[in-house]
Image 1 (tube, rainbow, N blue to C red):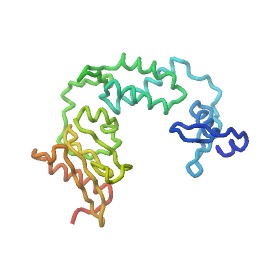
Image 2 (cartoon, rainbow, N blue to C red):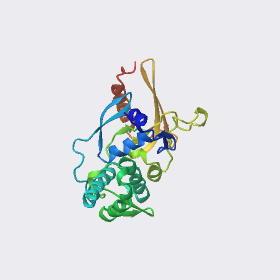
Image 3 (cartoon, helix red, strand yellow):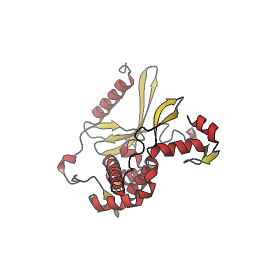
Length: 248
């Protein structure tokens, strides 16, 4: 337990990744875990309790293996968030450094390999990347006739700059914004219709019933045939997920 290590060695305090103060022992154990020296045996009250790795002492991965593993991690990121403009690709690789901090110094080399091996195209003055083996011009990528309510952290929404580039409006997550300054709502869910994010919805439960208020970028709901039925279907799926009864 970090508390036991701190009592034994008293390393003091250190600055953590978000600028606050943590026990140095906690950070030390965390770094040893990432380097394969420790494993998480269990948790006590949410705190990690560590144990020595039984296989520690094996040869560490060489540079070629580290590069392969980094490329695999990058491919997972690109597969989830593509298409990615160059700036966003660099941003997500920076976030990757918090997942594998022991390989932080390999980020630049991994980024260089990525831009040289992935398919790309110059669109709107910026280079965009997508997974190897995908054909961005393929007819299989035709949008379906469906409405989807997305979470604020959905891969389609997560990259706010890309979101604004693709759909021409700024989405905000305002749960921590004072009510008087909110523009979209406490927990606005982006509203995807076909392949366009056309607005947002705020959902709540009152007296056991789902209440939804939609807002639209154009000021009104689409007039296309099928939109209202598809929106009702998505709201019914949300009711089922929440275990609510149908509207009375």
